[in-house]
Image (cartoon, rainbow, N blue to C red; front, top):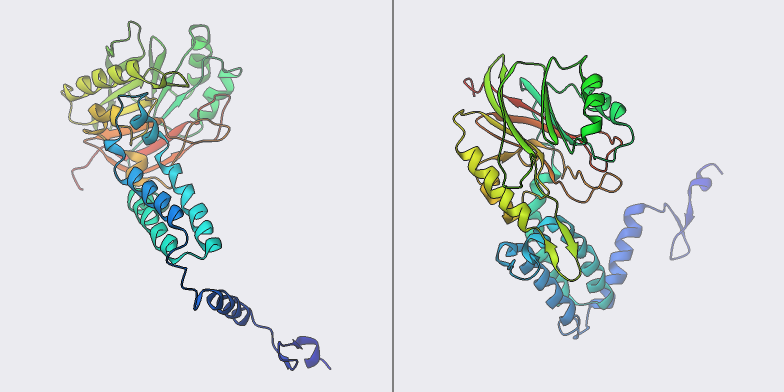
Amino acid sequence: MAQQAYMTETDNGGPGPERRGTRIRRLFERLAAGWRGDRRIWRRGLFTALVALLLAAVMAAHSHIPNAVGNLGSLTETFLPWLGLFVPVLLAVALLRRSATALIAVLVPAIVWLNLFGGLLTDKAGAGGDLTVATHNVNAGNADPAGTARSVAASGADVLALEELKASAVATYEDALAPTYKYHAVVGTVGLWSKYPMSDVDAVDIRLGWKRAMRATVTTPEGPVAVYVAHLPSVRVKLEAGFTARQRDKSADALGEAIADEQLEKKILLGDLNGTMNDRALNAITSQMRSTQGAVGDGFGFSWPASFPMARIDQILVTGVEPETSWTLPATGSDHLPVAARVKVDTSAS
């Protein structure tokens, strides 16, 4: 009687255990039966296959999409990872249409996406490092600057950069961060706080007419590091003008030139660049520096908007130092998420 409680009726009416593997096999057999003998499986779904191949072409050749009209290329590159969402949709359509042609075609964008972003799906974090850095666009309209300051200080960052500092709120940030950071400097709307001595603090001209970038030498126990803080101009998506980013692009070029002229070998850039690592407009910067998130981060590390992050426009870029791990910090009162990284300044043993 006890045995009978664990038995169920099979399809042929006799008793037998109902196993999950058997049910899955039967499902596949039914699906295959619907495809076998159907001579139209190669002729159906041609439009779906065409869309799949077009999607693959956009992802693979995104750098060739022109910026002449509405900066379409940069707009595509900003949200490039999200194009992968179309792959499962096209796969479902191919299955519903019972199209072998479409199924094969859908493999192409899937492979291209994995080639571009598959490496971001694994955790590449290391356990070493001797310097923790963080950056946060605190938002000029932040209703809780003191709470935001305490939150990012709790990350354990040795060096902290803040962008979009409202003049009337600077004193609040200074007071809240003073117990953690002995050294700090504010230049225009950006600031740098450090547990280690800072020198040679100066504004960086990014051709804006006002100060939104700075540079300082931070003397860590492992040696001096040139730390740049920048908040590049915002971009806008307008129906009549497309992706407007001309001033951002000019400022990116100017910042890239300043970093290239830097005399110190070890350099770290912290800030809101209003662009992703895929955006060609940032080539003057990204061609000479590594993204800590791309090198050792876990996942995409999207930082904006904080309510539903869709792009990583807040960056930590390095050269001359070795990234060990990179992550996104909890939300604050800003519309951006803070980001942090741990790097190895002393690379002599690497």
